[in-house]
Image 1 (cartoon, rainbow, N blue to C red):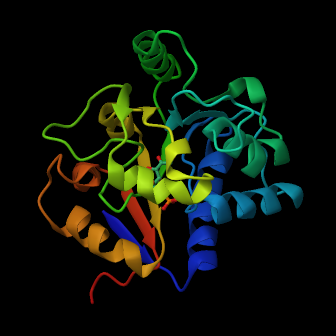
Image 2 (cartoon, rainbow, N blue to C red; image 1 turned 90 degrees about the vertical axis):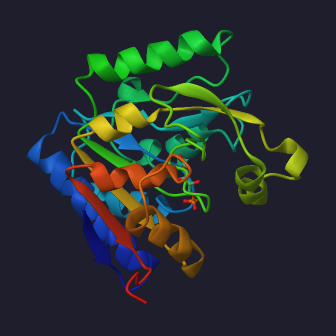
Length: 239
Ligand code: F6R
């Protein structure tokens, strides 16, 4: 595990974008695993800036997103498809047909989960997976549980996660109750994993996840076992 401590959110975003750029430059047809939330917005902005300067080319990149709410139309500004289009895909030369987000509107969500895992397998897995972390240690929407959930699955979001995400909705009642998330297997099989976290409110969970026991009660803790895992954070974990 490599830990990079950064000055602030901008610095974190630049350093994370550097790692993603290195991936895209060294393997132009790579598979990027992407995340939503407030953590990666700055990283995506930085990538867009470098793309606009002519330093990055996403034309051969394929992306697979971690998760999607169940029941939100893709035109809903809180859907993760909408987030990705607006915060990244619409601003770079990625082929939209090569951008993948779980379908939260699928009639049969079990089939959709199977399709998503097969898709990741057919792409040869993920080259670089970008992650954020929830205050309860979730990655994607893999919530604390008694066992690690292996494949893509539908989850009932716990109260802490719904409360944390309520800031983006008009009221807590509008926050979806379920989501589809990539499982731990695809994340752990990614060749590289990059987790970004900013703000002192993330410090406690980062310490638990990366200096505590590996346990499904803290899903991110499994990343301690990943052979190429980098944490880029504004939190000084030595204090
Ligand atoms: C989003 C995702 C979530 C977030 C996490 C942190 O696709 O998978 O696990 O990364 O909830 O969210 P922020 O970055 O908003 O603190």
